[in-house]
View 1: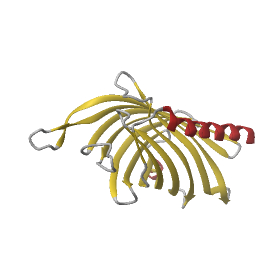
View 2: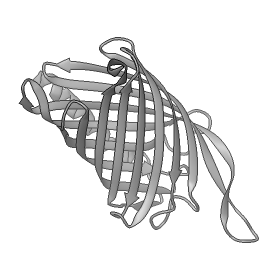
View 3: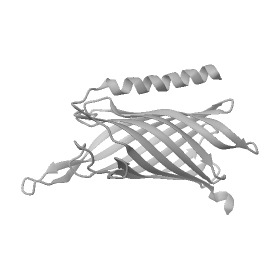
View 4: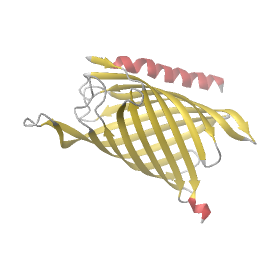
Length: 256
């Protein structure tokens, strides 16, 4: 088990070290981000569930709004290890920072499919998640009469996201995990004919701790080192991020 964990940690570290140096931008910035995050999983049957995820993100502490999104999905549990999902996401990314990534607030709509594979090495849970996002990104154009920017049209872009994470029990109570630690990495890859100037759109190195309040409620506190490359590769962000997450789990079909 220890040998496999060493390989996992080495892989996460290698991705984290390589990603910031794969593309060199003209301007590099850094913001201390704060993210408030909710995930609610609702079992509709023994194998089918509805998940609702939502986030409000801030840059420079709480001083600037950075982004919000809402992400519903329908999930199907093929077996104990594999879950397939199809979902929709709506994003709004604000104008923040100096220099700013955007000239005006940018909306995005995603239609995506996802596969999640989980397995155990003794008591340690490893999760692999692969998501294919079909993105429709609002494109801002300047109005020459007012000098203001507006959303003129939407561009189609394709993005592939791969996440590997490791969940380690820390404290147990009555054979159930009470407190756990997490570590992982998620890479966002621009793919397709309209992929932009860089292979990487983002990379996130993630570490945190979680507490199971009861069988239905969980809280997590995570530190994320986030690297972001803008579409034209003119700005690169390197953001230390604190994420506060609240998660709920309900078996509605068993309550009927």
